[in-house]
Length: 366
Ligand SMILES: Cc1ncc(COP(=O)(O)O)c(C=O)c1O
Image (cartoon, rainbow, N blue to C red; front, side, top):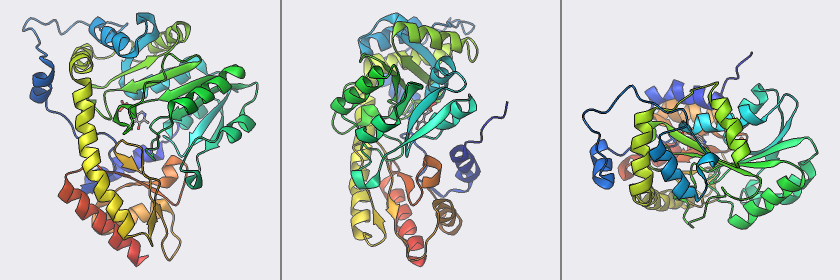
């Protein structure tokens, strides 16, 4: 089997070591273990059995997720990161030749992995001119009897735009009318400015998430899927083909974080993002001959559109940012829409301000 290159990951792996100012990572700054302990009261007994694991997921974590999503234990599958959660959904549900409809711009593994599995990928454009909103009329024209999944991120990665509950409900109903399922990656949803309930529990909806992006504990690599019992079962069977069991100790710590500190951790992320959003906002306003954007609905990223005197593709542009100024952002091309770059804004203020000045400097020379 030919495994796909994921150009976004290649870009990050190649350039993170060079970056003096990294505005490309998509996870909020990490929380220290002692800080988390203070928030959660988590203790590990000295005689803890490091040989222990549980293919169904640590019960403590499943309990925490059941309470968070108000669902049953058999609707939850724990995974190694959101990456495995997403992978398992595709592995469990897609057959060669199935059609899936995927938003663009979006998170590229959500179409590259299905392509690798032999699915036919139909792109569903989120337009800058429409504020990157989900276009229901366009969706209707793309659905066929072969559509198996509609795939979106909420908040959207890379734009940070939020789809509200009513829109999600409408997409789920359309999916259901066509015998398809709506698969939503909700990694960034807890950092939405306007708090929004998960879509898990709606008919025909599968949700994935993880502790990585907004809680600052991504090193634990804990992720999960929430779905109807029959779909969760298929995903669990798929997990027997991959990790079999996620790291048990991580699951215990994640359980404590989700049960005892979820709101605090999300608020920490929002506080950092809120402070930095104003800085980015002002920067865009001050450089509005060069830059335009759809302000994100929360989270730690945005997706400015650039307007340089000479035309330049986003990969070449981002290469200039890193080579000339040591600033790393991610090219829009890797999210399926060129003419933009993804900028994350969770750095300390002085770093962020310096990086933004340097980006503007390069843009003015082109
Ligand atoms: C939208 C989205 N989903 C999933 C992932 C992977 O998450 P994890 O780090 O938990 O594997 C990422 C990571 O960048 C992401 O941006």
